[in-house]
Image (cartoon, rainbow, N blue to C red; front, top):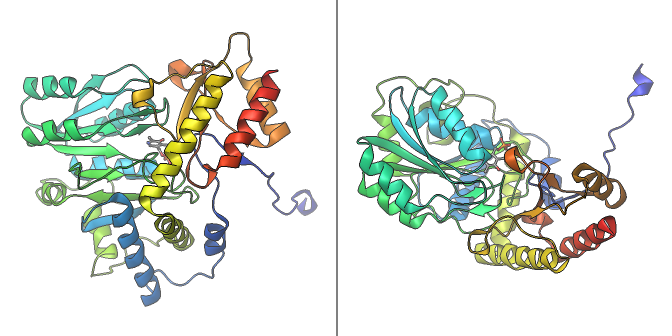
Length: 372
Ligand code: PLP
């Protein structure tokens, strides 16, 4: 029986799907560093440094900036369970799968969800937000997805942020796919609560969710009348571990914290602006290459992300067969469409360490071969 299980030896892949992305060898090396205890003074120092790095990448001075244990969805739940109490009104922009997931999470908090819809591939317009905020009094928060990974649309934040604050509501932003790929600008855009993930443009493995909260959001949490419904995600306790008190809450995933720290250090070494520029430049090169092959892109250019491109599958081409060939013959992973886009588009990621000129060329050449 034992002989059946060989030593782990996964195939070599180029990760160009909607996430995870390729991980920098330095991050993998950091993960192989021996463990220390999660209350060891040295680990506390590592946490402090990681918090500082997260603030820099989020572009914020927010004190309450930490990494939740869990993938991006744990960050999503953290934001909603801590900010919303049963009966609270929350407006959610739904223009893809992850807006839909926010609705599900908010409803599970007992919130009254008011949806703003846009078609998959489009963005939420400020006029829609304004109309809803005028119609519904006492909205506590408005939530949008900055980079909709299910479509490849980039949601502008600043006008919506202004409207949300004019109505004294909080702005919640999903930056799982945007952070480290395009500018998020937490302070500049006055975002009140934001969550991200480690496995997209930050290029660490999946497993942590960086979150950040403004003073306004922290005050709203402090005024809660009811206990946060999730023990594991209750920030009132978790911030005592990440804060000065260092109270034990749960055992921090040590190796993932090593990974996040190293991945953020790599982003900082390149420089945030340079990182964004690399994503824009190579994203646009990939998109031009696809159009040059006669393929059409799903999202309009002015709202199109560089790090995730939805490209229409040409008529008569078998979706899964092409992806299988890319994987088996070239080692390239790309994503299929979700929801209404299933079987209609491929989703090609150029995130973090995967966003390299050689990958753009490799993918375009491989796709051309496979489609020939
Ligand atoms: N939000 C967005 C925009 C995402 O792309 C994802 C994952 O792809 C999530 C949330 C959920 O993150 P995870 O799958 O890491 O839980």
